[in-house]
Every structure is written in C-alpha cells, then in structure tokens.
Length: 493
Image (cartoon, rainbow, N blue to C red; front, side):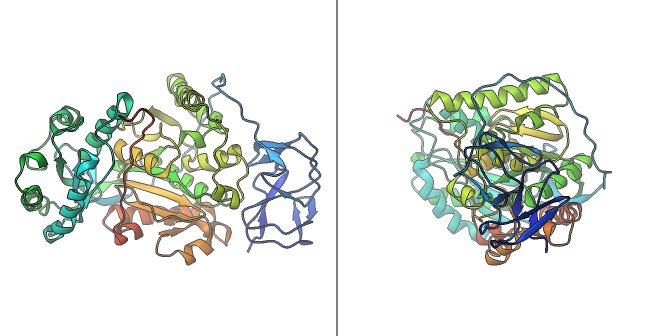
C-alpha cells in the first residue's frame, strides 16, 4: 500500500495515507524527506523547509500560508498555517474547455410518472405542513406499514419543525421546499397533513404545488377531523391501491439526477472519495445525466475553478453571484467567512477552508457548469449544476432532493448515519471506516489508493448507482433513516 502521497507535482506538502512514524523516509520524484514527528492518517507534512508567510501548496493550489517556519518533515496543520481567504472579491472569466469520457449509454429500471418525470423509488410520503403535527404523521407512518404492498418501496413520514411562526424568506423557503418534495418523482403518492391554523396551511400551499393528480396527492386537515389518524390511514389505504400497481421500466441513465455532497470530511476526502465521485459525475454527464453540487461555503477558496468551467458568460455571472451572495450572508450576521472546517474535519487533517474546498469541489469532476440554481429552484438543464445551499448536511441534502435529485452521493471520512428524503449513498474515504462502520457505509472509495485507479473505482460506483436506481436499498434505507431540514435564517415569531 502507498503510505503517503504528493497530490500535485508543485505541492510543498504530502498527505499521510495511513499513520506514519517519526524517521520514516519518503521519495517524491527527486524530493526526499524524513519525518521529524509522527503523522496521522489524512494529515500533511512538509516536503522542504517552508518559510514564514510562504504559501502552502496542496492539489497544486494555495491552501493558506505558514505562520511560522516549518522545517522539512514536520506536521503541517492548523497550528502553523492560516487561510488566505478574504471577503467579497471581483472575478474575471477565463473559460476552460471540458473533455468528458466516452458515453457508456447505461440504463436503469425506474418509475415513469404521469408528468414525464422519473423516480427511482415508488414510495408514499407523508408530508406535514407544520411541525405541530409531527407526532401525528409519525404515528400514521407506523400504522400505515400494513399498506406497503405490490411495488411500493416504503411509506415514510418527512417531519420538520417549520410551517408557522416564520416570516419573509424563511416562510417562503418552507412553502417552496415542501411543494418541491410533494411533487418529487420518488414518491408515487403523497399525503399532506395540515393542522389548519398554520401560516403555511394546505390552501396556502396548494398554489406552490400547482397542478396535481388527486389520485396521487391527498390532503387531510387535522382540525377538521374527529379522528385525524384514521382519516390519514383511510387516504393511505386508497393511495396504496394506485401506487402499488406502478411498474419499473427501463430508462436511460440520462434521466438520472444525482446530488453530490460531503460531510465529516478528512484529509483523504480530496484524494479518494471526492475524485471518485467527480469521475462518476463526468461519466454520468457524458451519458446525458445530471449532477448537482451544493454547499456554497465549501466552494470558497476553490470557486474560480468552477467559475472558469461555466458554459458561458451568463452562467459565469450567476456563479459569481452565488459565491458573493453567500459571503454577504455571512457578513450580514457578523460571522467570519472562512471559519468553516469543523472539529472533525480538523481532526481528520483538514487545516483551512481552502484545503477543504479544493477537496470538496473535486466531486464536480471536470464537466462544464451548465446552470446555477437558487435554494428551492428545480433543475432545468442537464449536466453539472450548482445549487445554493449552506454546508449543513441536512439542509444541503434536502435542497438537492427538492431540486429533483433522486439519489445523493455522500462522501465521508469520519462517518455519519444521516440520510435525506431520497436514497443517500455513503461513500467512505478510507477502508478502515468502511469496515468499522459497515452498517453506515455503502461504498469504499479507499480502494483508490489500494491498487485500483480513480477511474476503475468510479466505474464500480456507477454500477452501484445503477443498482440503487433500479431498486437496491442503501444501508440507511435498510435502517429506516430519513430526514429533511429547511434553510432558516430569519426571525421566529
């Protein structure tokens, strides 16, 4: 096994792929270095003497600068480097061409809906309009399992704490996201449960939903019922009779919409899992499919790479606005723009936001950026899209699902049981995590430094995605995990 890697020939640091011991020696090209201290997996060490204020180079790009002299072979981390990031910037468009792999023309078995959309699950979702009825929908979910029959994959309640006592953008976000989910093609049927007195009640929500099939979308208002639980079960029983007859049909992979997300990242995220997902994203877009990259704060420091891949000047300007608007959001609340890596990120070897971001954006591969979406907007164009969300796992993944993604690929170096409303594929950055948390992890990208190439592992990931799109369950689905969270940033009444 390779024990350490210099990712780019211009890097002045290398990354430990396993725990390394003091006095171990490494040769990278003509550069030889002896470790002067132990280095943990995922952490960086200097390849030569680095002067104070000199830039630290990883991925062939700047991830910060030294705040003290760093001798060759020493640990490089938060105690001796600092970010170079600043506030809102001006950007220039320097377009770069994108070369995608040859299309593979893959197919999966999905559900073609009446409106022409394609789902990869045939579920019945119970969606509350307001958090006040969460306990009711959870009770209904438990009692409704008797109606999981035929082709129905699951009956699931999507609880959340919103829908009332909100103002402005927060209330709008709640209505838009709930409407997006109600129309999601992974749901063959939906029961919407309202309370009756909430701001986002059923009658307010219906215009956001738009035209719908009354056989597939049902509504119950709890305050209007003698027994709201039985009323919900009656609707689900009727829904089941329609949904259970749906059949899977062979569909080209061009109809897949896949969200790209990372959480609990470590120093191997940008070496194994994220590049593997990036290569998969290129394979998918070459087949005519769609990939969605979210988490705007985790683009800071690597945004110019995405900007220069914009398909045209208009998309470039939308990308600039995406980045600067989110920076303004930080400063409006008097928060530091670049204080992003979490304690878990840092423990895993990530030192600065540039370090994290340059690993994070690798999930987008090399395809051209075709469009930029606001939070709550639905996908319009095939290919690689950018979506405005915060980095928070639940909020970002809910945004990707609401945009129309049928599956989310979630890379992690630390592990997490979290799952979104749609199947959430956990991809480990390292074999140790994949083995130790096999009840969470669906795929081991650590193979990419254990004898297989990024391209080979990406093909295996594509195989898994096709299998999941055709009905195979993720680990989180088997465990019954599912969560949604809606972006909130304003006043609560």
